[in-house]
Length: 177
Image (cartoon, rainbow, N blue to C red; front, top):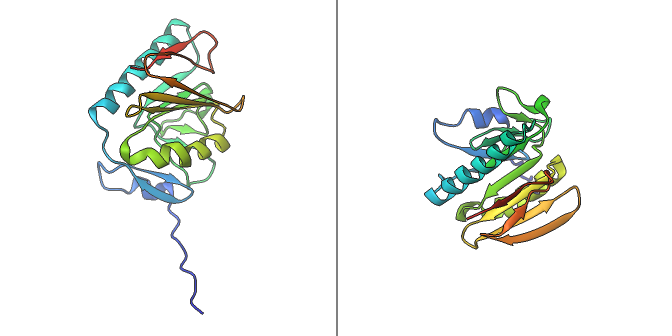
């Protein structure tokens, strides 16, 4: 009888040991390498970050918004490390010099062809169980935004150009173009 091969479990230390310039995320001890983003992806991050930061500033809000690369340690273990495209964190206690310890309140991921399975399935599950309140998947190829409001257990879909209400704020909506 052949013994089952034990899959190697990676930790955050392995992420930090990657060669300079190489980026990866860690989900349940498995490394997922990241491809460099394209220009459209970076424009979307920049625009969304600006809209969110501007809203928080105008409202004298307590939350902070961070664009990628920004480390998020989802659980209290060392086998989960992600870099959401945009993280909004309202609990200042979670923010450290290394990143965010625990779930951000709101996460936005912008889909790349190489990240579809990760964004639509793997991260959706991880963000939900970690306690993210709201998760947006921005799919520029399909020009749509899927929003999961985990607190309400709802899912909504919007097209680019529509006003999209932000669930963690009562008086804020965003247009994704």
